[in-house]
Image 1 (spheres, rainbow, N blue to C red):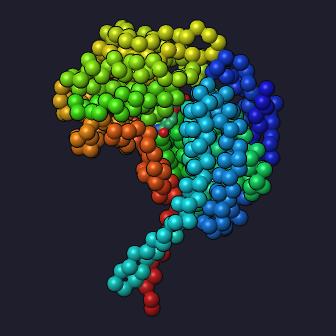
Image 2 (cartoon, rainbow, N blue to C red):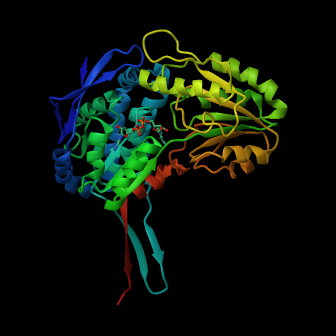
Length: 459
Ligand code: TXE
């Protein structure tokens, strides 16, 4: 049994009151976490440490990011094992997606920070230059689907820009954040700069969002929760980044290359048991290739190594959508049932025949469930793709028309003939109910700093 503790001021602190961390693999209790309700002590440590941390140069902080990347790399197998245990995802996914990217998040922002150029704007009689000051203490709140991957995606740029941190991982997946805090100790990372607190979202998460000395909130999670976070932070004029839910369309045009599209569309729908906000769960297939493409897709999905969903409670939610699909006229082509063994296992499920505006095909399920729809023209495909309240991501599979379709989709990111192919310099985020703001490259550095313009006129 792992005893997860808060990490405050460089010390590991436990609390009397704890919550259980349940494994999705077999529903066993694998850890306890502190039920934190108050973050005043963590914020005070962050305030005290930020002055010195913020006074370092970008290069000095980038060197620290490289040291963090090095110690994560050295422990990459342990991180993958813990992530797999906590989320239920196959070890290979935890190793090659979650742990790998956690290392890269620090490596990338270290290099990107060193490469930052001066921002100057010449006038005929004056010169402007921009300096980027730290915000101070920032709050980082992350979800359970890619726990360390998404938390470090925020920690790295926040540190690079000189801020100190109050981080709150999901109470459902605390293990790798806890391990991360121990690795910071191993490299003697400046105490109090990174503080990690555990507990329920509406308790410690809310305490972070409403704390007057936390000046920015970077949140990744569900749209409903994002609305609550925004309603607290906005009136306090905090900087706010919201990476929220999605219901992404995968468009397979009549000229798609099946060799890449079949595995690509299957992976997009079912990687991480469909628990990635970028997953393509609305698969739109041109009518002329529908009958040929679908059997190949079903076979591909049947051969994928797919883990359980995050919890039995979440599985109940996913199952409720499969039941809803049947009421809405859907036909279950594959799966649809619980896999009868300990843990939160459910069959990967493919549903056809639903109206494109049905609840099942427009609401976020966040599990191994996709709906298939045929279309007869590019315009119809785009209209279907743009007809949900979300606008996060999407993919288009076509030899010749991918880009022109992609540019007409109302979302923050679109992949053409690929999916989840990531360059960390590009903007990452959604429109409509998928969020506000962008992460990645300069977008992250801009969010985690205050841009100050100095205009100089020689006397
Ligand atoms: O989210 P929740 P989950 C989305 C994904 C799905 C959701 C699943 O689409 O909708 O995340 O993750 C804390 N005040 N994305 O269920 O419940 C909570 O403890 C402050 C989109 O974890 O919203 C957890 O730490 N905090 C994303 C975090 O918020 C609160 C990629 C998220 O919890 C809180 C990945 C409150 N009142 C998943 N209530 C993207 N767009 O990139 C809860 N929390």
